[in-house]
Length: 142
Image (cartoon, rainbow, N blue to C red; front, top):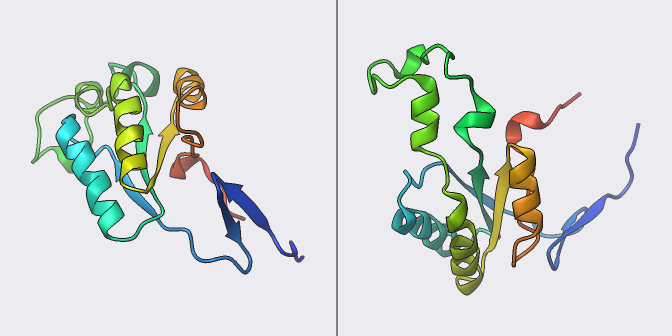
């Protein structure tokens, strides 16, 4: 089954058949809850030639129960429970506009994967749309 020639527009950029590759640098939660580090991730993505940089917008309250067992693969790195670990690396919502503006100044598109309805609404209302992308774990390939 052929899907034909598929193109979508992301911001002012066409992506798809016959278009240049659209490169997204995954910043995720690697900002370590440090705004300067978040900006540095944007700088590095821009210097590397990425078209966009993608963060993640979530809250521990909507992502995990406080009773979620610890991640066994992290036992050597931290004694924190799962909920606290996630809470400690959330992207503070008040940073969104600052990071978007920083990305815009650097000539790179800001994206963030929303993990809850509030995040969707906040990103849709942002000053620099498009700013919302789907979390990688939500894609289904067949």
